[in-house]
Length: 333
Image 1 (tube, rainbow, N blue to C red):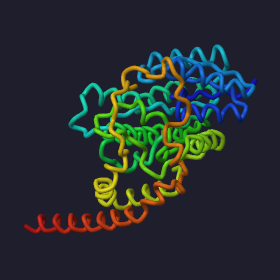
Image 2 (spheres, rainbow, N blue to C red):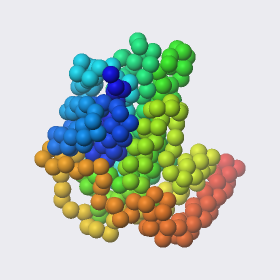
Image 3 (cartoon, rainbow, N blue to C red):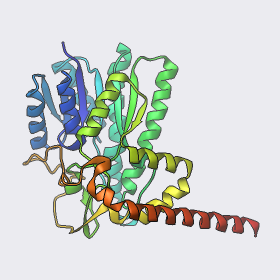
């Protein structure tokens, strides 16, 4: 019997690319997502690599549905060896313009989806004392940016949840491994179907990577059990700077992360996948609409923006210093 991997959010984007990467490594793959057309196409792509592929329509925000999916997978494919929690959604908006139900839904999918997936995996892996869980994080689990309060808060929560559960497994002496892979900006279909309240069409913040890059990192983490990995040199620098100087991270995000998330194209009316799947009648695939920019660190739009980025960084340093002086002045009063 071959190894068995479960991937949530597998109908498109990074989840789709990750499922294909597991299939290339000889894993039988179970794909969890809501969109029927995307799931069916992803199942055909993975099966083309000579492995078993099982599509299980699942809303990861629903704990009972995730549990039922795990039961079905073990009955039809066998014991789960790897579980990857990748499903996400977001709302591009200022926090005060997001409806409470929309904010809650984004958190339920992006954060609680990882909680329920981890719980379902551990319920089966801990008794066997083996297995690997990989939770997909983000550089935005370390630095919050404007227009992404629902997503950033969910990813911060995912990171805290991962650290806590991993420490519990270590305390228990379990051989079940937990890893977390933090993603950069990735060219996925999310920017064409996530809820958007802005007047312009959203985009990933350069440098933009193709989904196959983080997919390889996710599979590598599942195989070698590394604790955590930040994908992308620029993102490693931002994470380090934000961890050491959080005030600087806030100022830089305030100055540079608003317009960099928006294209020059006027936003159009389109279906959003927040509450209902969009890919029920069409297959979006792994890639989004930014193939021409997705060169990683060598993304042409990112390289062109470096002088502007340096200017914003220097302004952020100055604003951080001014803020610190003002705080000291207030304390002396």
